[in-house]
Length: 310
Image (cartoon, rainbow, N blue to C red):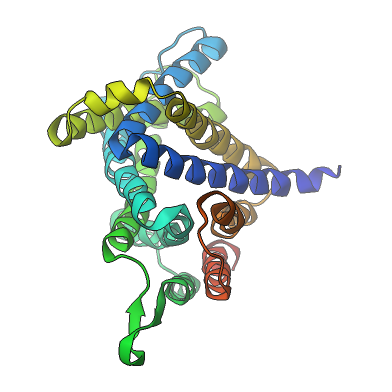
């Protein structure tokens, strides 16, 4: 196999990995509940991370850094995991993972605006075009003709709002994570391989996620659903699988992909999830496939590609 295609193939694999994560998350959320599944994912990620650190570095703890770096990573975990994943899993319960992943194409828009506000990064004309194309694709998928031939929303408004919230939090959390990793790398007290840096930094994001979901569970529903979920074999299998396909296979492979191909090509191929998920969502959850949903997903992915390829 020619080496010039390795990065592209890995990127496509990441898109399939994230598709599996979305489908498993929808199944797990419906079976165990949003908060139970999210809390389990955070704890499992911490355990897997500790094992990986111990095998590679001889200690289960991540590399030490400054208090400022810890605070930035914790803030990133609060926004990206606690608020973002809560909204994402809630939208899965209401509108399904297929439409949930479609709305996640809004994340680059949120990231671009946040980076402009916090890091002073310029929003180029091609980014504005990408925003317009992405929004057009989503509109095609979720809008239709109602009574009196007026344009109306085909999905429950609550599900759409949760999906938008999830995408915004993912974009904002990405920028906060970048800021945090910059502080983390600058203040490391030990040498750390570049490819390991995101995993060590993500450990602190997961600590924030664990604390946040524990507080939410205590305030909203208590811990009885958690105790019940631990005894649910299918639910636990979904929780472990979505953790593996997400934070481990997905994140690790995405870092590897950009080492073999251009970041723009990798990012675009990894953004194919809204298209890939259409068929399995129909097969598993009986979510209908329409020409408008296919066209909308395709246009949204084209919009995402404009962020990186032009």
